[in-house]
Amino acid sequence: MNVASWLLWGFAATAVLAAMLAGSQGLGLTRINMPFILGTLFTANRDRAKLYGLFVHLANGWLFSLVYVAAFHVTGWFNAGFGAAIGLVHAAFVLSVALPVLPGLHPRMASELHGPTVVRVLEPPGFLGLNYGLRTPVSVLLAHAVYGALLGAFYAPH
Image (cartoon, rainbow, N blue to C red):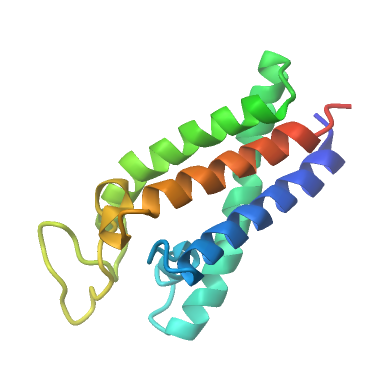
């Protein structure tokens, strides 16, 4: 594994993913804000939550890029197409498994079964994140495909 290449391109791909998701929210394509959701795991302060969550999201994406790099090395396929395919699988897992179970983990998120309370004020994402808008799955799929494509295109194995 080329650690320098992973450090550079893992972070770059994560930054692009975060920017795409933020842009999707800013343009009104989705209401999901993963840094805010992640940050509110740690604090109820909404401003600090955005900052904390951004760091958590960047760290998660950077570390998760190791899974992509491992897949590149195991298969010997170091290209944008394979990276994008991994990204689509990653996004499908996030949308269909991770987001729906998030209320069970998140102390400030209501669930599909139990509505909001004084503490649980965040709306649950629901299956495919559809509670945050019909275009949420498209935004998440596209951002993760680009993330994987960047890693596949630019990560240098040697």
